[in-house]
Length: 292
Ligand SMILES: Nc1ncnc2c1ncn2[C@@H]1O[C@H](COP(=O)(O)OP(=O)(O)OP(=O)(O)O)[C@@H](O)[C@H]1O
Image 1 (cartoon, helix red, strand yellow):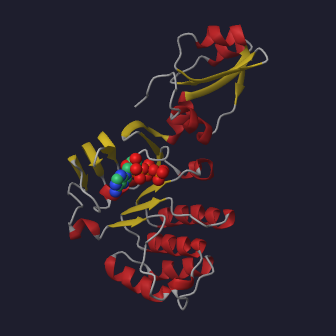
Image 2 (cartoon, protein in one colour; image 1 turned 180 degrees about the vertical axis):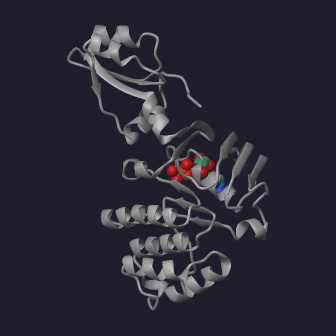
């Protein structure tokens, strides 16, 4: 489902959770929604899922406002960290209710996922551990086959193997039936291979929206003698730098870079992963410019 967010502001009392945010997402891609604590990610996702309305601006899913719009909402499944189902029912009843909500529901997928997460329909949701609750939330999210499926840090309590199972399941589900998937996470390196595009929110505003590939191509991490690094980065957008024992390390964001020049200056190209890049891009006192 196509999504447009136009000049959206959301205030809670004095607090601006979103501040004049505009964003356009194409259908059938997997998006990573990233940002520091309190950046506004959950607020944005709740708005896309029609749970809350903007204070200002417009949110449209397939050209329509999702708020109180049954025709749009039946195609949107929002799985958050908790409270995805009533804690009085058996798992099979929770799935039954979900099957009535989502027109594309697949019971076959639901049964398969329950088995893979070692859950059974007979279990009462009251006695589930945190990880089991997350597994059930993920099962609902993927079995809904909703054209817009949103996961807001849905992995609380899941151990590493179950999280990696979740990432594999997302890809399997997506390949089986392409849909728009938005995943918000702080465990960026675990999932970065999954994202086609990355949206970074900072203080209620869009800091960056890029394909994952472009984002990484824009980053260059170099190190070498301090004066040589300084000369090389002079006119570049530097988002992080540090000096240890006369050896300087700098992370640039922008490009394109002349790698022949890097080699000529005998600078070393260091690796950088998405998590590190995100830390530098969202640093409070970062020196470099914003790239939107
Ligand atoms: N219902 C609310 N009432 C008051 N303030 C709120 C409410 N919801 C969100 N906020 C505030 O809005 C800001 C954005 O919150 P939000 O939950 O969207 O951030 P987030 O990016 O999802 O953070 P995290 O990564 O920690 O989950 C925060 O300062 C938060 O305290």
